[in-house]
Image: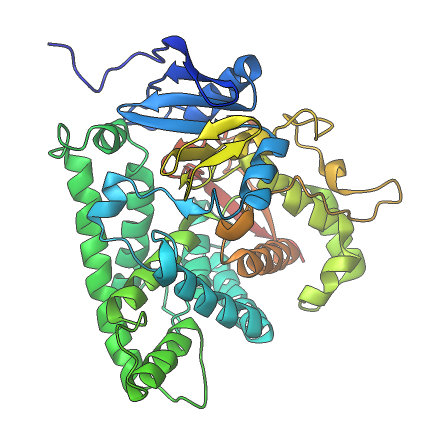
Length: 465
């Protein structure tokens, strides 16, 4: 019999389905994703959108999925119809994880966890800036220990980012086995979630419940949940309600208030806290670890900042650097298919009738590479974010954090991390290929998982100043 994991690149059966106002094109679509993660379903869907338009439907297994392609459709749906398109699609794998926390949930629980997170991240801007700069210091010390010799730069950067965004009050040492396990499990889960076997399970859960990679992810989630629960227990013992040290303290303080007030069925449960912290650990694994480093950035930093520590207030004085950071985010396109949504009610969108509970793929790749919005969408071009006077300009089409009510809850935090880590490291180091290896020989092809991740890279961090 044929191996179910060796499916064709794409299997398409085109037909039209009558709708109330228009005929919505439906495609029987199955995109091959090898266990090595080399498949790019976002690109396949982008190619289909060129032929069939910005709104079309595909069948993934038994699931009907509406695809939104291009900036106009993406923004109109997620912002203009935020309520209708605002729910998360809970895949069978997410359901197995017992959804909760900040990312993989809907309804009042998700709204309350999001409010709590936004309150902490928003009110603690100065506190988090100081914490990021402190972490930058530890990271640079670690880089200096390699004395210009090749080493894997991505892993310590991911550790540093996770130290911030996980919102655990006391930082972890990079050699801490528990921290290494938390981070590596989160990274492995994100990678494995993109494998063909897991996608087949999501499409046919009864037929493919046995796949090994599903069990791997669930075991990682279980182990990380156990470790986070132990951390929370320790933090609760040292909690001071008059001094909030971050998201976990904010959560625990609110939990205590509701317990004292006798609030029934409080959403501030241990389970929701554990899920929220593990969500944040996963969010910090990939988002901030891919850079583009031209010499012009270091020249601008030397000229404007000199040898002192970069601050967030310097951002407006560093337009070229800011433009490079934004263009890098656009090009690397870490979450190419965004987070799958579903419709919360029946909706007529751009003349198409879409039923309640329909899965929706907002195709972020099609926004960040939309040739009707970007001057040179497939080329790295920092001028996308500079005006004729060389000043930084914001562009609404820059939606790397998605849009609407599901926009990344940590956007402000990640933007701060990217700027401060990027500038602090480039002030101190020049990053080069190992001896005997040219830059052209470095493999920068991203590994495809739940996100696009940079491959492990051996680089040399040579003192700049």
